[in-house]
Length: 568
Image (cartoon, rainbow, N blue to C red):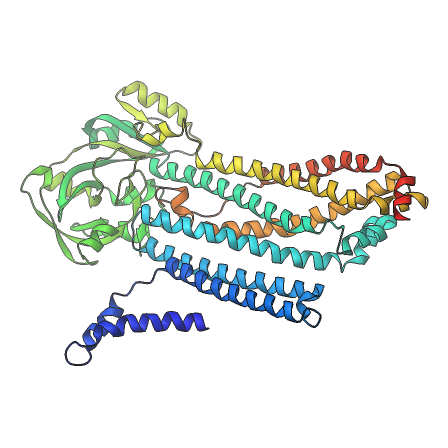
């Protein structure tokens, strides 16, 4: 509370001090203007909070240590319970501080993302800061969840009796004990499985999103690009006569200027474009594609602009505006703004550089094709979109079109083959490869940690196992008991870690977009590759259990008499 009050007081004083001594004693206009232009950096507030709380906790710890030294026998801090209580409160305070910082950074990222039309350095920086805080939050969350799992495992004695029967007593005792226990595995396994699930989910989401975006950029079942401009009407008739093609539409295009921006003007048949194009709910701003294209069809003077142009030039829906310099000349024409568009199938994003699309200008607008044909005399174009009849073979259609018209390319794998990203991924792994490598490394780390922990704990239990063997037990029983104990921790952490990983993936995708994709053409939604996730999880469990068996056998190869003598 004192920290919040200090921040609020600081903001108030920063507004109050410059306002004193102007216009008499106090300037109300300066005071109110400060709050109008006030911007708060969550990142700076987090740093300030960490410093203040760090100093406060440090001074408190020094005082506590001093108090303990003065009265070491009366202080509860020196007891085991007191140490645990103090440690828990410190961890809770650190988690609360980390969570608050993460919330601040998410707010900061949201502010930056909303103020920009594409992902740039500012949004990437805000996303990176949020990612670092998110990892810290996930670390603390895994720790507290592991405490809950260990508590539950100590309270389900009846389940052990039902599952393990004769070995249930020893397994339950080993799980319940505070020392020489595998309970430390819980936290690490929760963290590993959660991160593993997150890596696999984000990877599959990125791949799925790229596939959908490529199909969206292609525009429809069939995308036809001509190396030279051809008559739209004539070639629509010729291409429409090819067997397997259902509906086809060509784009008239011309260059013009809106305000001071060079734009590509595309003329379309709105009704055809609506039925042929692979539209999404994210294509237009504040309106669905059907309503926007229907208005364009019914109102000849309508124009569809990018949301960036509307915001920058301060247009409003229904307002008249002017497009100038058609074909680079003085020709000027007025239109009525009917909708704001973010992207369109076959054309890509409406504002900004879209490297996968072969386009010079960073802006484009849509008009009804009648205006370009009748008023501007534009009859030619280089781009066609078409739908295929149900059951038609797209490869046969592609071969037939390219055989009849050698200067046309059908469904190119790369719309812009000069995109530098295609060159870069030959030498630098794609983000999906990086995430897959990370998942594999996590799997290896998880297996190695389980084996090391098992070896260490079994080394501490040598004398106890020697007593069991001396009382008539056998090595097979001890091996089954240890494998069952490891299985309990694996299964319990899997049941919690995988759902926790799904939740963390869902949250991470809200702020990781700038680090995964250059533009959000299609809304990034979570997609889970259950096959790959199952392979990773099964590999982790099988490798951990099989790897533990040689360690258990090694620990059983010792002299019982020597261990019993050590006990005596």
